[in-house]
Length: 232
Image (cartoon, rainbow, N blue to C red; front, side, top):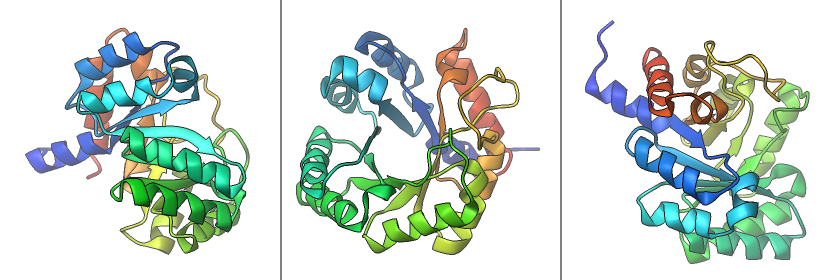
């Protein structure tokens, strides 16, 4: 199969690398090695708790598109304040929990867009470590859309139903993605391969340990991109 340059670029843009490190130096080092080899870099609780907002600011200053994965879930006023902070840091995408309710989600979206209109706000449906039904995920996604959010985080096993229900402009981010060649041990109940997630309609495919824990992370990321390419 011959892959066009367009398909290579599209596949690269869909990869989101989870920078799950306990300090900033290895996260920045991996970004520098992977710059241009992924579309998004995820800063989650592990890195943010250790390094704070500097983890986002340093990455943004170096040209990274950052997914701030802190899953805000609190009263609307508190989440709105956190959303403003995420936007000020320059996050390309950040998330809240859909289970926080419509008022909370609307407050987050309004607050972030007042600061940085291009920031995307998405809602976590059901954590991939938990069991979930497709109907449950679709209901939470519908609530997020009605609250004015840009999309949702959901397991790859729900991507196809979400894309069919909400159309091409609803942003779908899929964690729980494990290449077939990666170690089998992980925390996800509802997982799939990068090719499966891409073919089902995921806009961003989040991969962490198969890349960050590899002997050659750059080669591992390229291998994931190659797999995504095969279905685009």
